[in-house]
Length: 213
Image (cartoon, helix red, strand yellow):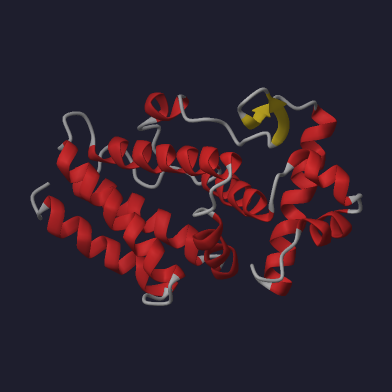
């Protein structure tokens, strides 16, 4: 049965984001709530961005082409997304936010962490084109990308902390987070295949936690 473990810990994680942009004095672009219709427009743009990535890759992705595929003017797309990196990061955030908890409550800490890491690794492997684009996009300097990068990091931290359970070693959590981040960077740079990520992360969990965890 799917676990309810970590529901409280993850309740504070931001919901799938509303990606509208509003100008704030001295603050650049900031997020604002969206109406139902605006949220539908954002979803269309994100879905169109993923299709563009599949067809043309990150290098061929432009907000203008995404807007055209979504059936709207580029100016309208820029109302919601400040850059193509913002679009890509939003697509990854939504995909991550939909990922279910991986292991039941009665599993050991090691089993829970392994299941969580494998789920986090596999969800990236499911879409190599998007994952490769995200490796570049998430390094972008824009405030909207930085916000999504923080949200994604918070979600991964919460999932691993929940998997470790109450009293989990803070140092182990930090190392596991670094292992996951390093694996994602390695795949994006072509040093590790997405198909191998889950096994590599499983080995890392065993090394960090030991067999008796």
